[in-house]
Length: 80
Image 1 (cartoon, one colour):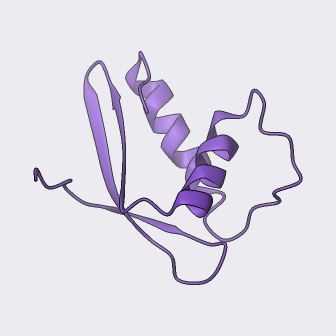
Image 2 (cartoon, helix red, strand yellow):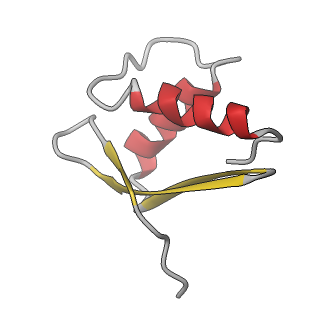
């Protein structure tokens, strides 16, 4: 994900983490970037997630402890 300002990137990460334990897939994610990203993480199960902005980069490994849950853990995304 790309955000222009550092505070926007931090807020996005904090908001996504609010959905780690449960997501209501019936909620409309239009205009809710964090919910949209959380739904994507559950649906497609990527191994990594990162957010960049001017002045910052946040990298996370994603694990799925239970069905329809996820956990973001700070990590460095490997170059392959």
